[in-house]
Length: 245
View (cartoon, rainbow, N blue to C red):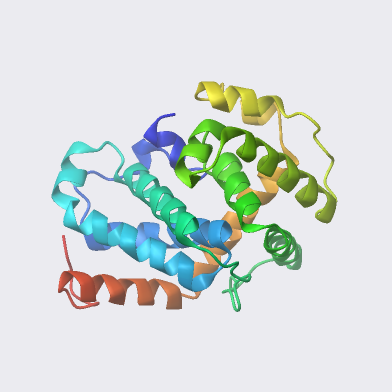
């Protein structure tokens, strides 16, 4: 599994401008990070905490990241994944679904209905099932690595993913996939380039579409982004409006 595999859908290392300022990097990438963190945790404050910790780490190492990494965004998503997993291991009580989530300014009714249905279905899962299937299906991690990151057994991850998939397929009225061949391929590394075209997984499509919807919502309603930016300023000594990097 390479760092580039952790990038959101539609983003490749070649899309990232070299020697980008930290401020420009933050503005460009924060909505994507918030969207994925919200899907993983289902709780606004938890998502914002993980994202701000990720950017604080990026700020402290920005010169090195910007010089040495082909895609600083891939590095960012790796750190976010680690932050979310650490948060999940420490969380002892179940957190409820996001109390109030942003909505894109100009979505179609179908897009909003689909995204809300996915978020409600994810909220119906026990936390371990939610975390396991999001790491496995959305972040693209092999089940062995999911187990390592969450501090649970590989067999437990397999059960979590199977049960979560069955629940999501039922609630979202998707065609069930009893045994998904993609799982075995993910466990061995990168998928063939044409896999997503030839073998479409309805659940993956729903998760990706919800991530895009949330990203657009965070872009159109930047309150969460502003809170994260202010927290970075407090932690690093830079005011929210000050250009950094």
